[in-house]
Length: 339
Image (cartoon, rainbow, N blue to C red):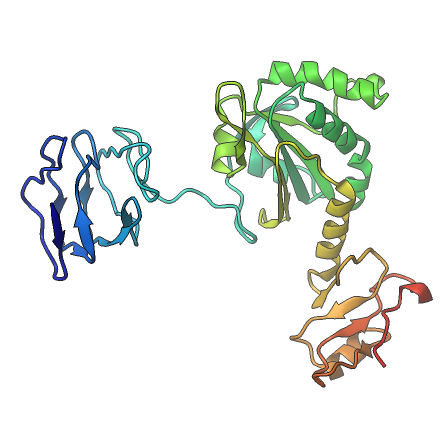
């Protein structure tokens, strides 16, 4: 059965799809459909199908119908798992509410509950717990007693002083229980020859049901455990004093982090935060910085030291280097100037 609709159509009668039971679409506004649509296989199973409170603009796509806008749904819904590429999978009886939090720069990190190796608290309480270290680094791990995670948390423990010098405290999350974390800690400390410490210098959150890593979008669909579930990725999130995401690095479960790069980015973030500066490729602390385009050359010459403007074929003076604030300049670190 094929048909083409080019005008608004209000669907209020049961629609019979080959191989399925009649299904009713109840819509308070017209549905706009374009293209030729052929129904030859069941598209949706179960009842009720859905109740829409707004228009749906649908266009033809390979393998089925693709929605160009999200459906606004109220009440229980059910869709088919494994349908067309655009099929949204919702558990039967689930209520569709506000959109899930998305990890992005500038977003406020959710205030989730933390059950940890050093007590229970909310994430925001932890962020505010030490005025001398107002920034926070959250690191996630797939599971306890795993080799790469063990090396990473050991390195975090030995680098905790370097983080503290930058006003940063650490907290980890792994998808096992607090008891598992405590047992695992002994292996971590043993490898770093820090057994006398008794515990890590930072807490590890228990996330056995994966609710936290799921909320924060830290799952790696390409890596699965024995049960076929997506493993948590190695996420690292830098959170500032306002609980805003300043850096998010998502490593695959099979790749350990480089903390040299983490420190390099943190140093750049903290240096340039209020100075209208940027750091060039492969920058390391102490090397010259770049003046932001929003700063005029006249202002730059007054605010910063040793302003150097690159000569480019375009004639545009947009690459402007200055000394790194607070650092003594090594002549070897000066940028090469075009003739």
